Image 1: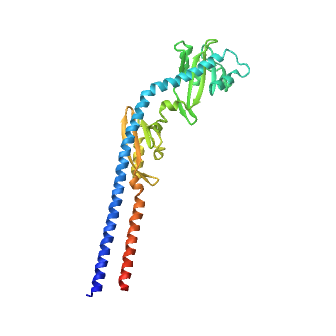
Image 2: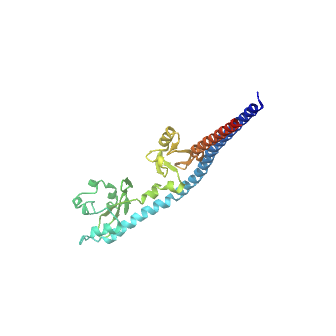
Image 3: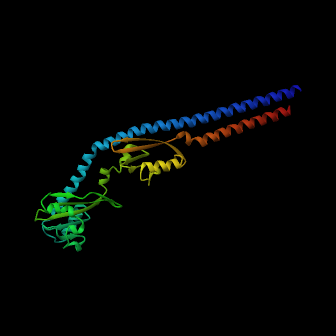
Length: 292
């Protein structure tokens, strides 16, 4: 074998070895980046879970005050209505009262619970509270309590609740129907926002609050976990690490994006680019050697 061919063989072998080494280094770097990304996401999820559980604890500690404030505000509204109504219904008084306190409707009854005035549905006049499924307000006419509310009922427009109080001008009850979103604070519907991003909050097996889009429409965390498992915990091209924990009567789950997985495509491109550049270098070397 001539000296030129020997040098050429050695050069090719050397280039091949360098190519292999660089490819291995690129692959190892990619794997380390991916693994470190997953580890970082898990750590971020653990930290986020601790913060979320603390936020839930603060909410639970404050829940009694929040509920008390909600009902105090309702009773202030019905008390205002009672003071405004003094047995008259001239010049749209009931309509004015509804507008002043933000009520959907108002009913006035006599001592026996029979509706004597109503707005806006005047067809209710002459009927009883019982006929309108408002039996609870009979406790006022019977002298058991002076004021009472029904349980808040969630609707597409907000929470509906009826609140009643003993009349000041005569025996009987004044009832207001109110629909708004204020009970959402008491129910914890916005709790996820206080916990941090990508959070799901469940109570009694039902999701009550979430700001993690993939969990939207899921009835429970269990249902979301099933959905996530089927999707490989990957949504919109991002893989997520999740952590879950219990706090009081609540279950909290948080999700953190796996940055390593997000960069996988970029890393692959880098590896391929490196390989192409190395191969081009080898080809140039071979061409140069051949000219000699």
